[in-house]
Image 1 (cartoon, rainbow, N blue to C red):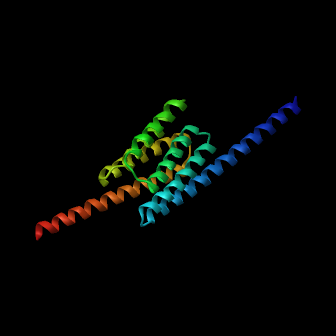
Image 2 (tube, rainbow, N blue to C red; image 1 turned 45 degrees about the vertical axis):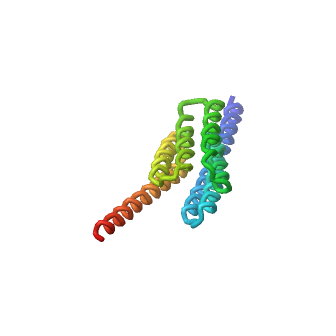
Image 3 (cartoon, one colour; image 1 turned 180 degrees about the horizontal axis):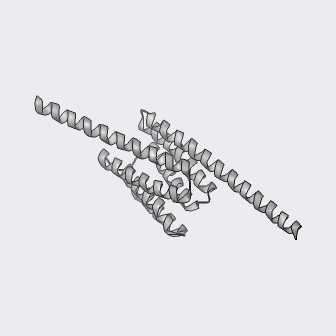
Length: 192
């Protein structure tokens, strides 16, 4: 009997070791995705920025796959393709195609209410990506990041939570700066 329990303990230890390797690898991928996303913000050209976001999303999708969150991986993979298409051919008609793709992923892979968070984030991000008014873009991206934060907390990915929090805060700082600039310009026009 002692032999059997040792065998089971050894097998359990191997499984836990393998799981921790997958978890650590997923967090490493999320960290590199985070760095790529931050680097995207530094780009001066829209196309270069979108290409770095493509890399970030691709790494983030891989991170979710390692965590066993395959539905989230599919949604982020679709987002990666959206970034690449927008970098090469930014046409508004693509918005409907990407929204249909996100809806197809939800219908084909739905396994729990948790899947609704990546779906909502994908729909909000897609809608926001194709808007011309910066305020709408920022609002959609902020709501999408909020969905991802909740999702990432629920699936237990701390690096992904930090990444989305940083993107949300960066978006908020950009929104505040834009509002101050607009107020200063309006105040300057009234004074003159």
